Length: 532
Image (tube, rainbow, N blue to C red; front, side, top):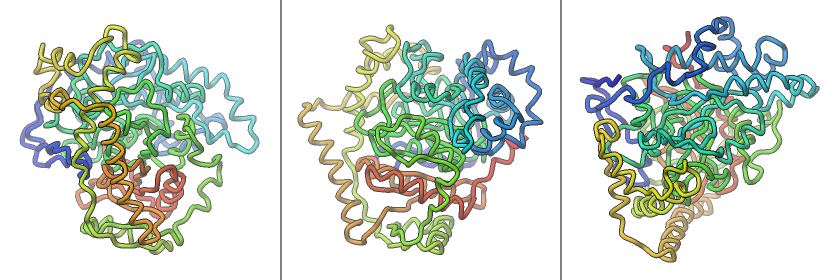
């Protein structure tokens, strides 16, 4: 049932990257129009699994073995017989049932539960010898049997793919997205779908991050009605932070993994563009879109990265010693002077410097990507009909942005309470030839690359250190990968992320840098209200 939020004093932070100039406004919590979904209720989400979840009584005994534990720790506990993959899956389902909707702690982070989740867990249990027979315990570093949530713009055969939009409630697809096929081949349990900023935050413009018509308003577990969730992979970040799954998969065009990862104190990895297949993912821009893992720690992020089917070797074969030698000694980072106004960033730089890294201060002149909105408009105008034509349910064949806008007008209070101004901008974007548009994209990428590579050459840099998603727009345009990891909490308990940026196709550096910083600082703390 819909609830109205009134007289809440905290202002939403802008969740699109400042570099992109998208002019998406922040929202005061007093202006929020919707809290809970008009389309879902808790029991409906669980469907045929409801009885199994309600009857499950093992949660209290499993808390110490599962909450905040890494994939290797969980795999080792299962291999030693302390619990099963089915128990693990039920543990997370019970937490979602307890916390996510229709109560005073609800987060609205999960939009659907996979009806086949327990069957997939049972299949993993039947092959438990896979773990036990490996004397070197490398199987502990496997995604097999691990419950994973997917952002609800990623196609799955088992559930509709809505992108948070009411119009797509019946968008049942006949094939998994390619990254989901890889996950299933590796034995992952697809637990369900995570809420998101509707249409990956490229729909309403003047709306809060984390809102979708289908899923309602996602809320931050560190400050349920006082802190922004980040967007657009809001539900993915929140669900990992609250321990509703081992890990989640998000998507990013510019900042949509880095922002919610930072806002929810989890590790978010935006890979070099093209690392993972985008087939079967509702698009904004085929030029910039990418999926990426969101996890509680760097090791889990590396394991999930391997399971998503990278197009090249992002990291070497992992095991117990994967990040043992990871360090920052001698690494030369560019850091932006203005960001030092944040005391957490200043302390993070001191920590990095104390570990032997060399920091070079950069001025705050960054390229203004004034054509970024034009790029997204023109790409989505072209790419969304392509998705509808081949990767959606058959009923959407021939649909485009204009058809979606027309459908939304049937019941605007339910389907678009904040309007659909960004979709309107897509329709109004002037036509451009394919040749001109390709040149426009390449020129923008060249401008962003030139900015980074000139700094790297001038100062002999290995990479850059930023905050949250503050430099995500330039990194996206340059195809540079980025990873954010918790750098602590301010006096109000709000999380912030330290974001490492590396050159294109040098993603492995991010894992080494983030792992070294994580090991040194261990900042992540589970949200207090969700420890029970």
